[in-house]
Image (cartoon, rainbow, N blue to C red; front, side):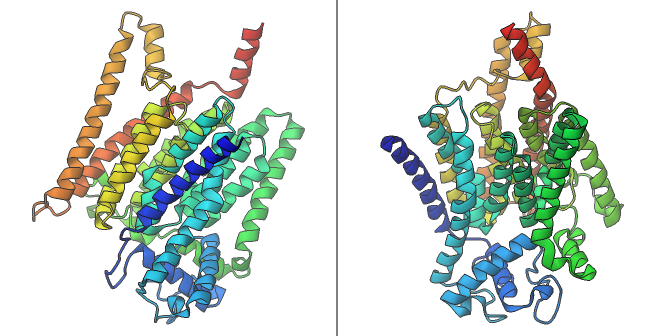
Length: 510
């Protein structure tokens, strides 16, 4: 037992050490006035929330210039920044002094900011990962520890939170707590946890439709009285959690509407920088802004996103199961990332979270996706001076996958719905052919990513095309994400629902 505990502690300590090592790098906007980057954004929110009354946090004023990193996340983030700001002010008042602290960069303050991210990780995300892994009944203790290490070493999240400087691990950790609770029949707790994730970062909406459809589908499958009671209990849990977090902002209509206006900044445009989604990639050849208004683009994005959500949502609603629920989380977040309005590069972390959950069962496609997800953020990471950190953490992740998933087949044809269909309906087609085609495509994909990465780092772009490398990376990654979206939709639609699985098990026992 002591040996088991020691192995687990070693894995966690190593994951924490990697995070600490990445935090020693530069960060977003370091020494770059006048905005200084995302590090300064988080520090400024601590300054605003501790220096001004709550009712002024989201309003523009002489004391709160919204053009200078105005608060644009939901209230739970604001409360978190207030708490961190109080601790920062207790240590050194200069860190959060109104106006005077702008662009503050000292060694001690950097330590404080880094540890504020790490503490959130240790309190919320890391325990959720460990619990998820240790609840996998089919794995041995060593396999659970190794899987925990693999999930905790996903480079995309580490680099963004500790290099670019964010607190994504808190919202993603709350979402993972929600998935765990719902997977084990605790729907009210899971609903409350997901509502907390939504109240922390609005991007958690990427996962909202699967939660809604799965819970509604489960209630629909029950007898009408029991199902209605379950639905009411879930509704009370959601509304109570929302009211608890938002209560100070529900006292005045204008205050509530201003917060909503701030967290959905439509004026920023359809995407930020060169993001690997459909609209950014298509804008290379189709200049939407030349013939469509902002409102028209918003309507177009809304329509395509809703249309893209239909297949997986309806499938989950009428054939609910935990496996379909997790797959729908991937599909919903990918559709949002590809087609929705106002998308950021780091939003790819939202589909990456549920993909991580499939690492023990679909190691080949999961590793492929997570590698491309990290690569898709390369232009942002180059800008932040995080190329070496990205390379090192990516290598560590691949090594962890190889060691942690030993004994799990890396054959891409295992469980592949296309291969299953072809073997059943096209017996004359060689099964191994799929193996070589998929493997060759995988290696070609990685070589292409490596080639584009080297070009971006080593060779300056032509002066006439300064955004050439970021655009190529965005389009290249977007093509991958479109293919992954199709793949995960096929896997979900072909997966049996909970009733079908039960019927198959009953038939086998008979």
